[in-house]
Image (cartoon, rainbow, N blue to C red; front, side, top):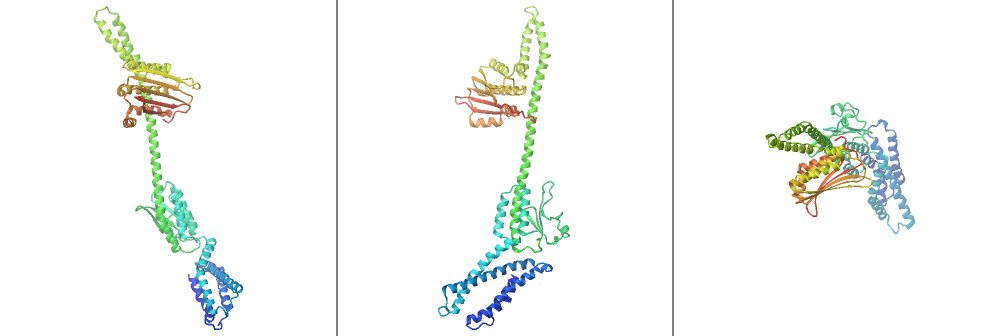
Length: 495
């Protein structure tokens, strides 16, 4: 603006000494050639000043951009002059037909109407090519806003914002300091960023007194500070630069706050996942300990109290008929039967000795003997299914699932018939228990799925092998309990 005012003040008198006499129909006071020469020499003098401006600090940018403007102006004036000459020669305008004053007024009107918008577009285009700190405020704000919205992490947002602001404004450095910094990252710096962002310490940094600090506030909370260093070429930030930074600060703060919240949420989810994994491992360990305790308790009962009861029963049975000892023999026999049932219920030896199928067959006969249920067992084995026995712990898990499902049939289902199916395929093994009881309505099914400890226990027993348990109503009435375990995968060792 200053260069334009000075240039107009210097060139306008010379031009007016040509135009005013022309409009009045008088002779030229100064020939037009001298006026045009003065306008051509003006940018040349500015160019010479620019070349020798190494000692004129602070005006290099003004002179350079002013020179671009004058080059555009001179080019346009030349184009207008050439166009006028072409029109005069092409259409054969004569002074007798068109008065001189009317022709001059028409030319001036065309120049005034078209010169400013054309030179503005040309100058802005050249400045964007020649100078790094020339940009469109609206376009830059729109592009940077859309870019920030699509970024997720705190590191990416901070570094992208600093890089875009630094390159757009031609900054020497920039930084973002957060109130709760990421571990091992005190702040994010770009360019020749100083080692400390304290304003008092920063003043000793080269051009540190020209740095600016903007608070980053989101939802009324200060989450950090945006530090903007000086320009690299010694020019202060312009009004559009200040407006761009001020407009972007709340958007940057909101994006960083959202990223921080997501980062904290992810860390909390990771902590909860670790805790869930630890609880699952503890649950599996407790089940293993429970099975071991059951096995030890069954062995202890079998080796000591049960053997003593058997010896006592033999001694009593040898007593004469009708004696008092003969009456006690019946009670001892009942104790023996009870102890055997307890030992078998705690851990059936047939499961260890003969495998899962034999253990399920014994379980079904035992439940059928203690109830009015009619129970059937069917086993299926695919052609390419493995012939060897399953892992002992997996056999115990499937046995306990079947045991819990049969207990539910006795306690809650009110069933009369139950069928148990065990199928082993090359890729999976599944167990299904179907009863003809009262079944489950959807609301009760959801409640049992989430609250019933027996169902939770069955799912926990299958979880180490990646197994699943489902409960659904039988179309013909009753409930279907299905357990499925994929084969070929490794057991969850962490559990």
